[in-house]
Structure formats: structure tokens, C-alpha cells
Amino acid sequence: MLLSSNLKKIPRHIAIVMDGNGRWAKKRLLPRAMGHKAGYSQARALVRHCGDLGVEAVTLYTFSTENWKRPEDEVSFLMGMYAKSLRAEAPELHQNNVQVKIIGDILGLPEDLQKASQEVEQLTQANTGLKLRLALNYGSRWEITQAAKNFAQDVLLGHIQIQDLTENNFKNYLQTHDCPEVDLLIRTSGVIRISNYLLFQIAYAELYFTDILFPDFSPDKLDQAIIWFSQQERRFGQISEQLK
Image 1 (spheres, rainbow, N blue to C red):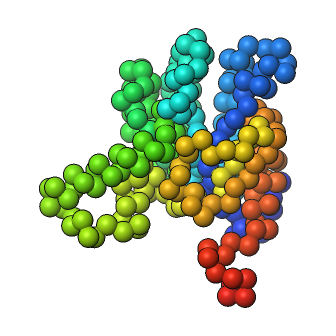
Image 2 (cartoon, helix red, strand yellow; image 1 turned 90 degrees about the vertical axis):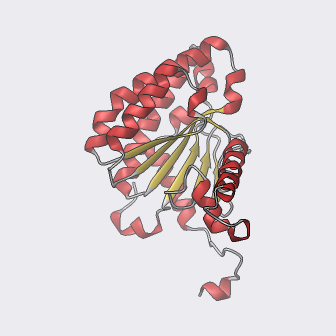
């Protein structure tokens, strides 16, 4: 476990691609649903741990726009699990001052999950602690396209001039506009790929890939990733001598 003296080295915003639930179950001769349940339990523990460490924001890749291609029974199970979990976790998240928002194409989700998402967002909207963002029916290309459309709409309405578009104010049109930029992106299960996730936000993130399947990615494993992060020299285009 990390000591409190290391808090200054902790990333402000951690994004996680929670990969490997199905393979975790397959290795144990279990249905894929059991892997997703184990992954949910691990995600719960990681969010709590991030809050304890003082991380400002955590974004979890929960369900991508491409995941609809999975078997219908698996998708149906996941949609039900997400709705049930949001309602079950909402009171504790609120008690712990966690602010929850769903990012992604919410209108493309089943009605019950839309309702559960709205309920937890409304309950926690005034909270000032950890910002928990759940990427549901999310794809980064979709997000950037939507941001461009919303900017164009503001230009048409006269709210902003097209020449005023900068990287900084374009961020205001992204769904993570109220979070710090991603410092650390973690992907489990040995896959080395971004998979259409937060492409704008991770421009200068440190990328941490591990072979560990997500249900086994415990808080101690997260600590190891954070220690690795703290050892990286983040130059942002500069050279080492300038940082010193």
C-alpha cells in the first residue's frame, strides 16, 4: 500500500480499461457473467481505494459502442447488472461525497439503465469528492464528433466565433470537461490497445499495460501502477534539464 507521504505523486485522473472479465471466467470454467460480476466487485474496491488515496477523478470504460456486437444474452446481462449496481451503490457513493456522471450516448441505453443513471447523477451532483465517470455506450470518436457538433451549434447561435476555437475551450465540449486531464491510463489483460477510449483526453497520459485480468487487478496492483507512474519523467515536450 502507498504511504500518505506519497500522495503528491498520485495521478489526479486515472482512466481504466477494465479488460479480461470473460477470460477470467473461462480460465475457471465459469460462465462469462461470473467474470463480469467479479469485475464489478473489483471496480468497486478500486473506486473506494482511489477515494482513500486522494485521486481527483476516475473514469472506467464500462461498455463501449462496439460492445453491442457481443452475444445478446451477455449484453442483456450487463445492462441489467449496471442498472442494479448503480441503484445499489448510490447511497454509499453519496455518503462518501463521490460525484457520479455517465459519459457516452445515454439515449442509446435501455430505459431502465437510463433512469438508474439519472437517479445516481441527481443524487450525487453536488458532491465535491472523487469524480467517478462511467463510460457507458461510449466511444471517443463519437464524443469528439458530438463536441464538434455542439461547438458548431454555438457558432450558429452566435455564442462563440469560429476563430475563437482553441484546444482549451474545445475541452469544454467534451464529456469530461469538469475533470483534470487523464494522467494515467491503465489497461488490464495484456491487450496493448486504446480501443477508442478518451483519445483527446489521454494525449499526454502515461500508458500502463498489464497482463493481469481485471477481476484480479486489486488495489495493491493499482498501487504498483501508481508507483510506476510516479517514477516516470513527464516532460510534456520539454527536456530533462528544463524540468530541473
